Image 1: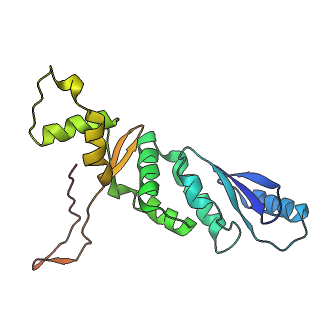
Image 2: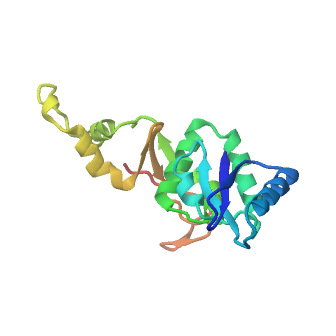
Image 3: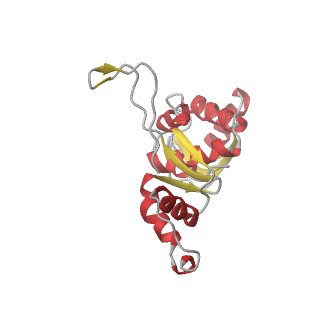
Length: 195
């Protein structure tokens, strides 16, 4: 992962590979400071990552304030070890939650287990087939070419999650631990999946 850092009203900036060590952070800071004498605060103007939806979430984030650099490094260290399915879940979670600060992005990262990848569904057509199966609707093979399974998938499934190249990602419905529910206290995470 890398970020493009610039200062407001200055057209040029600097790419920084993450995670970055203290020396690299200081070098980038000094390079930015030398570009223009203004007192503007450096911010993220671009993101190059395996998770395209991350760019929208981090753009305009200040880099050297409020421990943001530490959080950006933590995020980069997490993402380096992720498999493709984790990256797909993270990308879908970002699209679902729309975090707009590094703190809220990290909250999504720390709760990634709340998002489930269903690799059976990689297209809207597959989602449509699964929806018909779930409803117990059997389609005669002779009329199947006349059905718009893609539209069926989009209509019934798209509001419940996000389609990714790795599959369909849905969010768990997890009650909080210790929350009273109909006279009972839940002591462990329980989740309900419905596609």
